Image 1 (cartoon, rainbow over the protein chains, first blue to last red):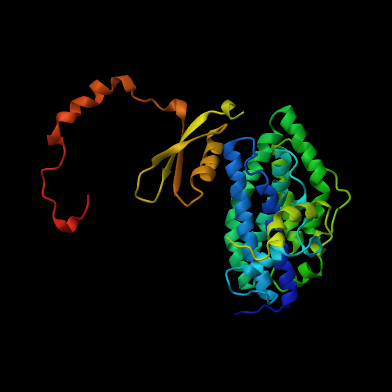
Image 2 (cartoon, chains in turn brown, orange):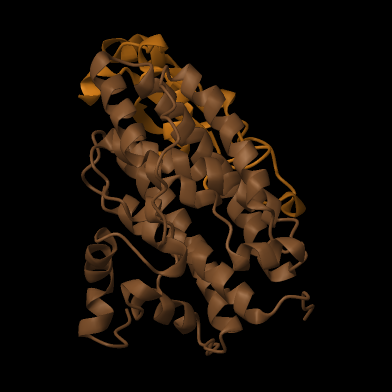
Length: 261
Length: 94
């Protein structure tokens, strides 16, 4: 297998971050299952959740392989990473662990994430590391649809009624200080960018900014002023919400270790 | 709430070469969202390669009460069925 010139630890961290974003956001979105305002949105959100969890399976599978925990028995390595780590071991962005709030807030969180995730995956599909490129190529197609859908709904609700506009603007204002972390590069990002394994986050930021400028204008929403950047998720320092997500998500494997069905 | 949105009839083409088939209906505020919703509700198990949506109110249907005059006359026209030809075995089911 081809080896990039970067060490496995940086790749492991990177795969963990992508996988943890997927599994945590996927879990959050799945909380809507059976509760959405209309049946059509309920199914659409469940589809997005399943896409993200499917992507997480691949990323965490790669992480497990790099970490030497892959047992080659149908993904137990990925499952161990998802179900048996504590909050401090998770590397997801703070944005994705934030509570769903109302439907508008869930969609705004999704849009802010998709607008980052889609260009990132598109760039990763050209990664010099073939294992990353392969997963990213598949995931990018799903992310294309996610972004089209969340963008469309953000525009409709932002440029909707006074009530929906107010809720979307509030959601944007409330979530804004979690968006800075999407573009904060640390040594892992820099190492991989130098090796051509991952894009420079500054490039992704430019695409995200252009996407937001166009969409927020259509949605008649005001871009919040730059301010304090809430960060820490990528190195395992999370908001209090992640523990509650894990308590629900991991309960079964913790209470009945190794349970399968 | 969904009753405020119009009803759309959904047609899916299962694979190239087949025609679109009616698969069900859904609610959506406009045609674009109806296609999106149809994708999510009706093609999540890889059922389709193409989607049509039509506003249910744009479909004109025959009246059930007229089924006698409309359809019964063709009951007795067996000569309209191509059942009087011998089909060679190589052709297979038609």
